[in-house]
Image 1: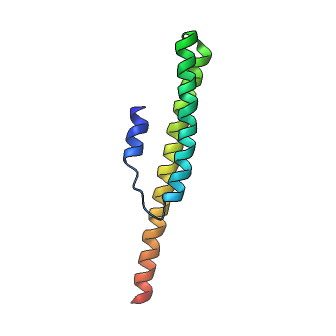
Image 2: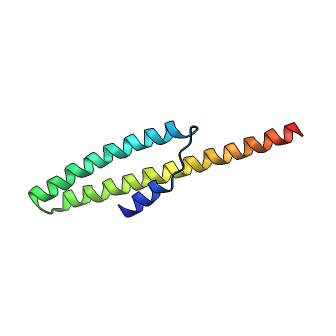
Image 3: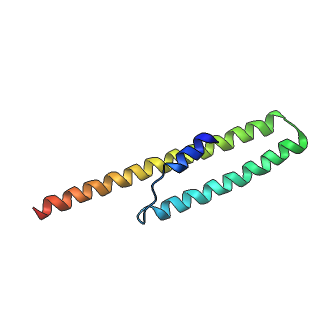
Length: 92
């Protein structure tokens, strides 16, 4: 959970990437809801292999989703930087 929160805190949101981030955040919210249900199940039924495995997979999915988002944002930033360079070269 700490790793996931650190990834979220490092995201830079701009007008250009807001839609992308919003869609990823919606999916994260869905996974968070599922995690809460699994956690409640764990508290009600007690620890069992199936619930614990599902909780771990949920956390792994959230972390993978954040890594994909970070990679996509880096890609967008690179594209933007290269477009800016091309604009400057064209202007000269």
